[in-house]
Amino acid sequence: MSHLRTLVRLSAGIALFAVAGCAPMGVLDAPATAAPPVASDAVPAGANLAEFFENYDAAQLSLSPQGKAYRGIRDADYGRWNDVSDEAAVARHKLQQATAAAMRGSFDPAALSADDALSFELFNAAAARADRLFPFRNHDYIFDQMNGAQSQLPAFLINIHRVANVAEAEAYVARIRGIGPLLDTLSAQSAERAARGIQPPKWVYAYLISDIGNLLGADNAVIDDISAKVGKLDASDSEKARLIAAAKAAWAESAAPAYGRLLAEMKRQQASAPTADGIWRLPDGKAYYEALLANYTTTDMTAAQIHDLGLAEVARIHGEMRTIMAKVGFKGSLQEFFVHLRTSPQYFHTSREAYLADVDTYVKAMEARLPAFFNTLPKAPLVVKPVEAFREKSAGKAFYQSPSPDGSRPGTYYVNLYDLRDMSKTELEALAYHEGVPGHHLQRAVQTELTGLPPFRRFGGVTAYSEGWGLYTEELAKDMGFYTDPYSDFGRLGMELWRACRLVVDTGIHDKRWSREQAMQYLKDNTPNPDGDIEKAIERYVVYPGQATAYLIGKLKIMELRGRAQAALGDRFDYRTFHQVVLESGPVPLDVLERRVDGWIAAQKSRPRRQLPLDARA
Image (cartoon, rainbow, N blue to C red; front, side):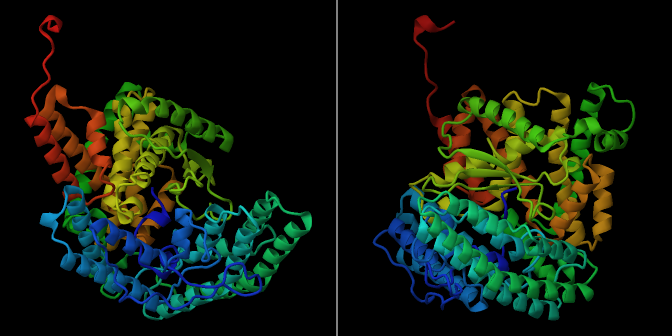
């Protein structure tokens, strides 16, 4: 899964990573409070479309200290958090919509180059999707186990905030001090939403309380992180001691008390939290879910159509699984084979080190094979890291973080090793390909490195495209010669089955009003995954409605287009060129991807077949 910072969410919590608040950098004794957002009527202009988009990007970044940090930009905003007020959300939306309107009024797509015309179309479509979702901007959960600021703020400091000099260490301290007012603002927003019936189900609060408790304990991950980063600075011992002392004071005086107040608010909400899981229970919940499905899948498929597609795909994959089950000689039903894989110790690692060593082996073997299937390879390195201890209990099983464009941060595959019995050996290979190469790391690093594209295409995302690509590469790896162990090939099918089941359970929960328990039972009956994996997955879908449907829908479209190209081109089909067509546009809606591939097929068919010299013919 390409995780929190790369997917479009609407909550104020996620807005932390999109737009800016302001405070003086390097001020150790004052919180990083937010300033008013840039006026939304400051619509960018430009002599050409490329300049127009660059100016829009600059306007967006002026609102986003954290967005700058993700890009590797460390300027006067480096000690600030983003403005999470509704006023800021409105200003950001107005900026985007006014920019789209100005673009339509200033440029004629028919007069643009093909690349610029595509950028025009993509920006217009993204603005339309955002506009459809905007009325629901206060419908999602500010605090949940997947996306809440209670763990995102520390994760940002640890994973994104670099400390290369004293000024950047002071900016880190300013952000610690800014956690207090920021958490208080978000806590108040959460309480206001809860009063309107918009809050997560009761079971979510146990995770939130646990996350907060981890940060209020004696071992503090944030203080440990800044201490380690400061320790590597070229500075005097007294200077280092001053910075660490300032960080501890900022935590004790601002962050920790705010976490304490947040803990009290979460316990208060827990007492009266709803027990129903789907967002159908929210005000305008049906319309909200429809808008989410359209946004994530970039299709007009209804919840019922997605549900039925899932059921059909589950049946197909079960059939392929039975073939492998017979190959390995298992005697019994498919469901009995699931139980065997779920409960037998030989299918699980006994140490984190062993798991990570196997990941390293598969990734290195895949990297050596990539040039035979790809023309363009990522320049940014890939690293694999366990999820940090303070959030591993609540975080998802695996996710990816893009590299920074300046090369200062690698692409990172995070794997959650909290419970090794949730991380089957049979799935390890497919998971590494999905999150690493040729999956998210290859696609997202190449995207970031497409310097000829406007920033919104280099750094933005379309879930069905990006997650569809990740799932597509799991099967592509089989075409590349991997999964030589039939149990790993079964694990590949298990991962695809998991995404097919998502279509069933996500729509089941949010449209058909299934309970969390009903959805978990469906996965137990139809997948080989361990109980802990099943529980965590369903809990993810409950708080992240619609997103999980994009994976298989995107993958099926890419496979459909590849099959169409292979049928049309025959022996002229080349994986490297096909993949270049898919990747060189950056993320696009599925209908645009189809049009691009169809255009490439037509162009290839119209080219004369290269003739061999007479003396070289058989």
